[in-house]
Amino acid sequence: MNARNPVEFYFDFSSPYSYIASEWVEAVAARHGRTVRWHAILLGATFQAAELKSPVSYPVKREYALADFQRSARFEGVPYRAPERFPIPTQNAARVFWWLADREPERAAAWAHAGLRAYFTRGVALDAPAPLKALCAEAGLDAEAAEAAWGDPAWKARLKAENDAAIAAGVFGAPSFLVDGELFWGNDRRAQLERWLATGPF
Amino acid sequence: MNARNPVEFYFDFSSPYSYIASEWVEAVAARHGRTVRWHAILLGATFQAAELKSPVSYPVKREYALADFQRSARFEGVPYRAPERFPIPTQNAARVFWWLADREPERAAAWAHAGLRAYFTRGVALDAPAPLKALCAEAGLDAEAAEAAWGDPAWKARLKAENDAAIAAGVFGAPSFLVDGELFWGNDRRAQLERWLATGPF
Image 1 (spheres, each protein chain N blue to C red):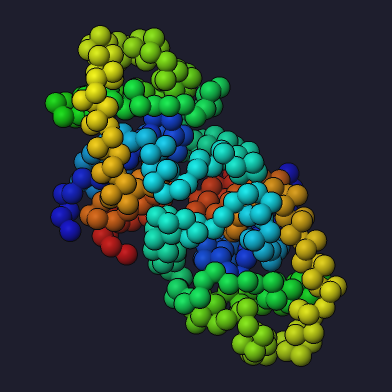
Image 2 (image 1 turned 180 degrees about the vertical axis):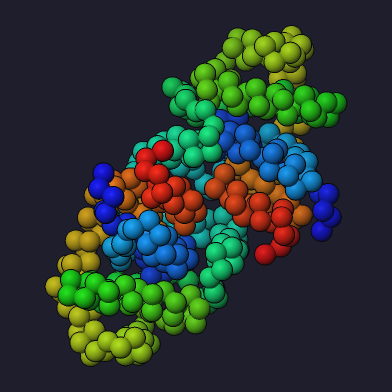
């Protein structure tokens, strides 16, 4: 175990619990001398690999989950407005993330925040080209280049490779946190992650 | 909202997260002037009603869940030894619970603790008549009467009615906590439950 390993943070742009966790993960990591390495993934891919479905696809659990998203956001003090269309496909937003990630990881993380906040506080349709392109511009990116990237087979392949890598690492849902080889799944594993960072294996 | 409403605690004798929560729920409730009303249920019934399955019935999630049971127990400082046979049918243990609950709720709660601890620290087979009967005797119950109760159509019907009532209350998994009309699902909702008890709705 290396005390300076980053916290590998796996998120999907359409995952409410990923959004909530994205608002605390950097501060929590920093308090323990860690950085965060962001990984945009597609829950559709990890769910398929693990034969899982979204909690909102089950009849009774759906109502609970929709209320729990809001309560969990309030619990963490995170602004949240349930998007009218939910969930949505997020491959284009994720490809923009990876397009940025190699060259400018800090801009990629900033884009992750921009996308998650836009969807979960203003309902911006990340799956529709026009609003996504406008959001890129608003976030200070070259919107034309971003649009070209999300349609480029190279970045489609990159996202697929990142999904496959996440699945190979044992990720089956989001948010997931992988630190020092230990996997934590869910916004609600915050306390366990914090203990791990503070004291090591328990 | 009545500050003296009890915490309604729904558990299954074969649920690891229910066992972990059973070890802290009374202390948490007491700190906030609440009592706990225990409800033995069958996850098989709530899962069926909500079209859900156990996390250990999915290929990838299974490995994570089995490790998370242990880590979550350590996190809460609760002794835990993974039972060799898991999960097991728990209707007989649950019927003994309800047989006790009307007349002696405190003995019913003590039986819940005895059953959960026996299964999750010693692997006692709650689904087999001989070890269950021995456990009843060890727990200070009239073992013959307990055995008669779990085979009695009246207590079978009572357990079914309690499962139906839990499902009607929105319960789809265990542990679940219902307090002041608010439902919390999962051992990992402890912090949210504590805030609710401390400050009311948030």
